[in-house]
Image (tube, rainbow, N blue to C red; front, top):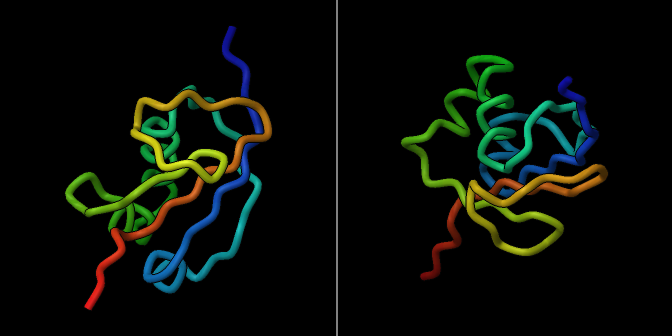
Length: 87
């Protein structure tokens, strides 16, 4: 039997601007950050475009940079943001 968990999803910089959403609590069946990303991409065309696999998107789990294989847990905070560029 699968169960869902609630995580807090945050978007930063250009991702927040393109999606037009602030932090949101999200009920998910995902067990990893990568699975969560896929669930979010399935929400609508804007999420699919902004978070698409061909896009350079960094991820953090509980304020620590992570890979898509990072495991999720109840109440986790997941952030998505573009790579930081300097100039």
